[in-house]
Length: 230
Image 1: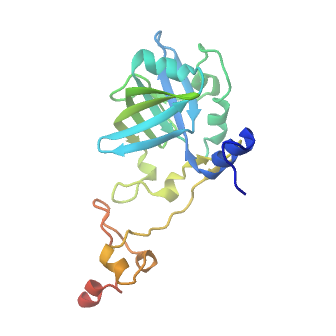
Image 2: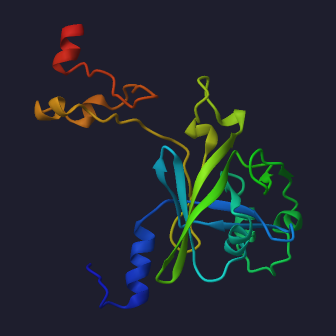
Image 3: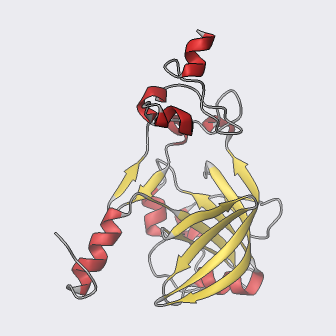
């Protein structure tokens, strides 16, 4: 099947939306100019740079979250994980601006460290963010922000203090009302160019342990260097 801008608009956009998955969910906590708390999920969201850590959230139409970010300049991204799917979906309902969704659903909050809005107590990871730029796009507004603090539940960390995906179990958005929970992971380190040129492929290194700081792959037993060390 091939679709383009001349195809039925719904078919075209839904094909793309269902193909680019899973999308992480930014469950955004923000404060209004009068101090009211707002909580709402957004799945058009992604990291855009790593150092400094910057992220982007796309808002379609008028959103209380966007209004609040414009007023205060900061917000919290609570990452959605297994067990919080129903609550985050409930907060997607179109409430009046003065409704505190967290209080309505009995979701406890904890104070943030750097920014004003609190974070969700049940969030396994929460990112404290400060908006840096807003960009108007056709049909949407993009907000770019720097992550100035991160809270991670010790229960989802491994012995070295890194996130264990099997403990973390993040939830991703698919097309329409479909979601998925990531429960397992596998490692395929990036090979050295010389190894690929020599005929070795990434599968040779699959399952080996890469350096967690630099990302440098462990030496493959089938590489020239690996055979010399063997």
